[in-house]
Length: 459
Ligand code: NAD
Image 1: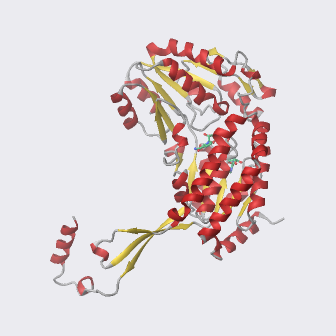
Image 2: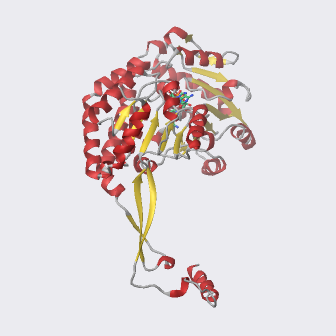
Image 3: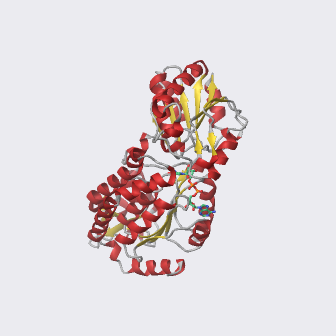
């Protein structure tokens, strides 16, 4: 077996052969990847269920289906995306033809998290290959059944020189990060994101960091609470609350709180029954360590619904928490579980005091029928992406770039934005030789006046 260092070195040599620059070759590999993934549909869905009891419906909706859509999109559009784009020339470059080229970075590292273990490993892989890179992917060690399927799929489609999956935990990730990459794409926690950024800085390696944070959900006094609760329960409990863009906590207008709690309870029971532990649709927490972390988070809080914990089964029931202190752990840490704190506001300053005292969130949600309140909220707060009157669905439109800001991430991807994330933008001016006025050449004496006029003309 080759060492990590040898794999990286052989991928770099392979990249230099220019084979990955061939668009038809890239398309043929994406097609082969699609065939392999489709052939493994059952194995993928089964692995996700084994890893944390993810239901077939959720696995298809939030992982398998999106991966196939991204593959179809890349296969259909790659020629268009990769073609050099003619750009209007400038008077300063006249005569010239100006272009933007998209070139692959080279040999890239992708590190994936466990919470959407198939999607968040394969989607970056698709776009990295589409852009013409070679890839080393490290899937998460916490969802080992899915990681095994990922490794097998990649092995069946690619040579190790082009793309490979290296399984392992922190030690493997650390060794991978000590190599010199042309680009790093990381999805995971803000804490580990800082470690990745530090390792990348050593070689000034460009990165995309897709991180987490506390995404607020603001609910004002103008909404239909029944509809809000239905969407909120879906957005919070999908994947057992282990979604980077899940609404972390609710800020509701104080007079609406009691009614909201009442309808949330009804909706949770409607979706997952009196005992969600028995529901085939309610996933588990990924491991005991995270279950214990969540149990600790709700320990000294006012639980108004749920709160059942079974550490051995990695189970935490859907839980509502009433008005936790803003400096409590549950209002400071990213929750990443089926627990929803509900805090209230009376004035806009109350909302500012909560959101501005935390890092910039990955997502922000606002439920309201007041146009002015919606626009003011969107413009006032900085966040990665958001939705008005629903949750999570901005992830579903490949035309929208997806990423965080500040502590919730750097850079963006999805659809064409994913192809661009894995490409270096290379502007090229092709100068004509038929005209070469002496104006720009020394000696400059007597030319400044004309130069000023040219800039005035350019505006
Ligand atoms: P994590 O940061 O613990 O792990 C992510 C990856 O980093 C794993 O492959 C892991 O092996 C590796 N890793 C862990 N410790 C490392 C270290 N010290 N050095 C180098 N690599 C290390 O994250 P996670 O628990 O797998 O995922 C949950 C987090 O990811 C949450 O914060 C969530 O919000 C975030 N997330 C963000 C997005 C997004 O698109 N922005 C998507 C999913 C998850």
